[in-house]
Structures are given as C-alpha cells and as structure tokens.
Image 1 (tube, rainbow, N blue to C red):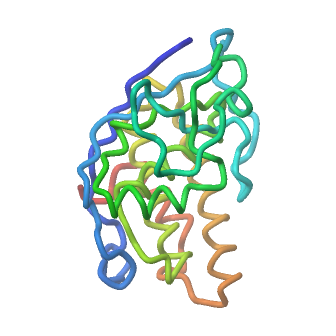
Image 2: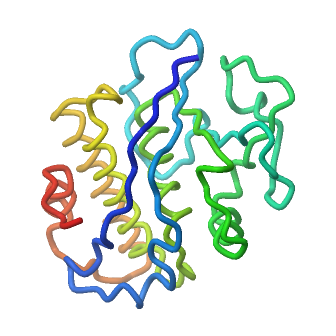
Length: 217
C-alpha cells in the first residue's frame, strides 16, 4: 500500500494571533512534541480523491490503525478491516472512530506518544485533513470547554501541516485555498452554534493566512 511519512513538527499555538490566551483553551499545548505521521492509502489507490467537500461529518475513510506490537488495550478499539478498506488488513486493530476525544485524553494522561501507536489510513483529501486535525488534538490537550476555539486552533495547525507537506500529498494552491475556505466556513458554523463571537470577523482571511504560512511557528 502507498505509504508516506508526513513531517508534522509542532507549531506555536495560533490562538494568540487572534487575541486569545492559550491557557483559556488548552491546559497542555504541545505536551508531546509532534514530528512525523505515517500516512497510508489503499493498495490500489491512484490519485488522491479531492472531490468531496470538507464538512462536520467524520469521514468513513479515515482510520487510525494501531502499529504492530503497540499496546492498544487502554483505548476503545475495533478491527481495522471493518473501517479501512483495500489495505489488506486482517486482525489489526484501529482506534474506534468515535473515540478521538477518548484518545486525546488518555494519550495525555498516560503520556503515550501518538507516533508510537498509530498510522493513519486516509484515501481522500477530506479524510487526510481530518486526520491532521485529530493529530493536532492528540498532541495539544485541552478540557474542551470552548469547542469552537479548540477546533479553530487544531484546524489552523492542520492547514499548516498540509501546506508544508503539499508536494508529498499532491495538493496545489487551489486545493489549499479550497480547504482553507471550507474549514473557515465550518469554524464559523461552530461559533454560531455556540452563540459566541468568533475571535476575528475575518475567519476566511485567518485560514488563508495559515495556507500562506503567515502564522508564526
């Protein structure tokens, strides 16, 4: 199956750029230094599927598969083959798709490095963006008291990683801008659902600036 090592080095929390104190949202930003993420696509995969818009639904084609020999017993798990199709998986385990929040808390509590446990199966750009978003969650713990702000920070980190790995992933400027604007729209809807004001009136501009690499490391 096609395997790519993505460079996902830790970045500065983007919230101060919009006037929000880190401590207000995260109790342990960068508790574990991120470095690489092993990304795999199905064995018969050709071009990365970029056709599906990014929305709030958890992509069915996104799965965090436990590495061989990794202790996965402390996390909710299901057989990977039920979720990751076309990888030739048999008895391998994967993080249960509903358990991203559980993993975020338990990895932090046990100080287990995500890179030691998982590789990510993602057959579409939508799934990979969400995978990068979740990877940010795994390395930056917060109580999730302000979900829209928590998700905003992880979205911006994910975009930064997407930009830095653009050649390895196979995305261009148009792809990056589309992802940025779709995530900005999703972020806007989160603040509206919480009946809170976003930290900037120009969320589109904020997300596009992340694509341009204008958020400080």
